[in-house]
Length: 287
Ligand code: SF4
Image (cartoon, rainbow, N blue to C red; front, side):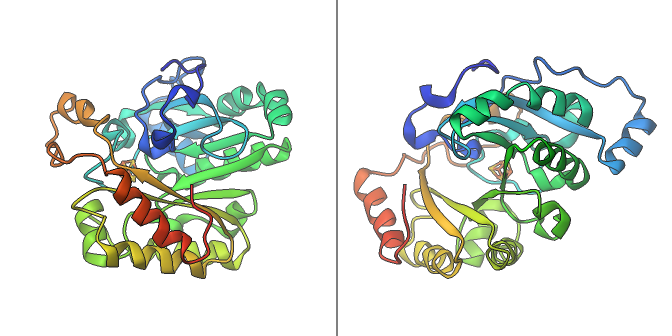
């Protein structure tokens, strides 16, 4: 998909940023030629970031038309990751905050007319907290609606000051059961739960997302744990249940990585209905 195309061409079920394959790159952004030493200093200062790609999308990644920027680097290793090429920060392109904000400003009129804005996704946005803070503050200063898409695993890296510049969080809760969470991601669940609680305490809007993988995350008790948790967060305005699909498999092969879910089928309509109903029964709005 080119950077300028919209995600409206995707099947509705596959639209969330972490659940579609991205690969348009940094076309239209000038890549920094700073030396390695300078790059590290600038990254620490939040004036340089490592970016995998960006795209303009409509009706996904938040309200209205959005510029979604995919940061490179992620601490998780989700078995179903659709963009394993975003996992390593070193594989991204170095782009300055000035350059990225220049590009973001170009779409201000589009954001205004559609009720859209900026979404930072990944990879994991909080792998580069200083750069994220600079971009979010720069966008807010322009009156642009801001969203971050995160697993919450690095929530402790997100300062309160940064959160003041965030309007909406797409919070990916990959499982409610600790053992399943670790099996899916290779990491622990608690940091995500803590981050979601912190967002709710601050009244920051959350769209909570859950990827449904038959035989991996579909256990009734596992779903129930996520649903019960979501229901305790007062700022969750919607839940998105995303059906697993195989669209990212080729990237794993191309990267020489072992993909373990090759034999898994997408969930049936019945299974999707059951899981969505588990969330609805807690009074949550489900999409
Ligand atoms: S959080 Fe998981 S799905 Fe998202 S980029 Fe990282 S490994 Fe991939």
